Length: 230
Image 1: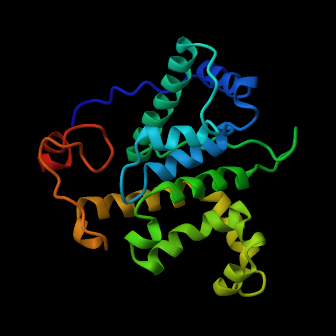
Image 2: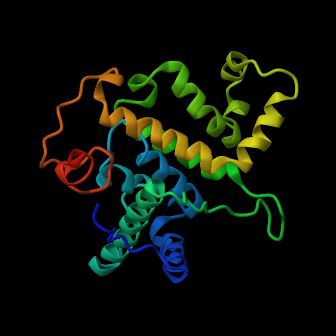
């Protein structure tokens, strides 16, 4: 396959993006970078590709009041680069470096809840939804780490009862998933990548991929130049 042309964000790029998104233009509604990365990982891992005009307004907290066309181009350009770099990381052998912040300044505990909440919001953007497109049991297993680490079960006693953790298991699994969150992300990505490339495993019928169409894996290359070249 051709070499990647993705330009990852530098530390200065991340600082600039964070400064822009915390400006008064966004009224505090734009996603923080950790939740944004979580959402993008889900957006890039689901049963169908999700276009930028669907996920970008979500991470921006709605329709932003840009100060100028130049500012709009800068912000949207940085977001697209983050999306593309995340896609490349998910497909690479090295995996993805998670953006995680301490739960409190100077603390040693990291905030997995915000990252995983962003991931679940990305899951909800997909049409068909993950639970409709895949095997119920398998999808539930894929989503369980994110549900637990996001704190979603605390607000949904019925769902917690359905999962029926044995005493002490939820805390034990949560600790394990924190240490292995990258593996959970990659497992979900690979599950849906296989489903995209073998549509018969997905419940909803999808059009046949043409050789000149974008590859379903999300690489941005034509199918004939990517997985269709096998």
